[in-house]
Length: 288
Image (cartoon, rainbow, N blue to C red):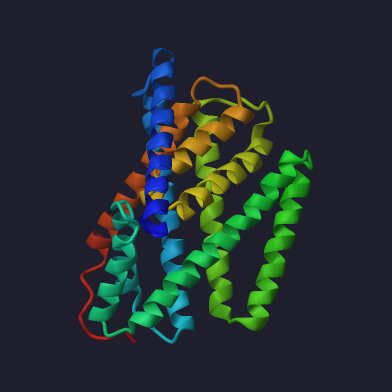
């Protein structure tokens, strides 16, 4: 058995374990939860719509990466291609989304090497931006306080922007800003779900948002880099439940994690439908 195959199997096992853990907690908490209340459905709808809007930032970031590599597609093609990329990431194997992007780019006449490089830059940028939240979370674990962790995170991100702006290009600077904004919004969605559904379990009001955003992005990063877990399903959810349980004493956390996962799935589907409805199928000619 090859190392790649072994890692894929391990990732799938971790995903299955995470799903089983969340399911077990849901069964435990089922008597105390009303899963289909008006409030929970409103929270899910709001989260999904917000996530859908935030996906535009990632599409714009990818377009600027392509511009940096000398490829200048029209925005409609980028949106269509990126919406396909988002929904195909749920296919087991973690390659359908990348292959689909390569195929669509080849149909436009773009080089495979440049397209693959754009994906590598996109992933590297997301990981680096997510690393900022890891730094903030570690500082919070060391009782540094939300204010100190935010200032440290801003300092790290500002330094990264200076380096990218000096050695890279304005396009890559915009990429970093878009990706950081997306991660911040995604984390804010999760923290909003916690505060909406579970109340204010930390008793900190708005200051509780910062640690919850950091925890979400820390779990998101682990889910993304885990092989064999499509879109981090199971891995991100299990970590979110485990880490938030250590922070918060609430009997609704498993339900919040479930709502968070549903909101991203629905958001990806809604983004795909909106792009298909609002953006006509792009022409086969090379974008300019």
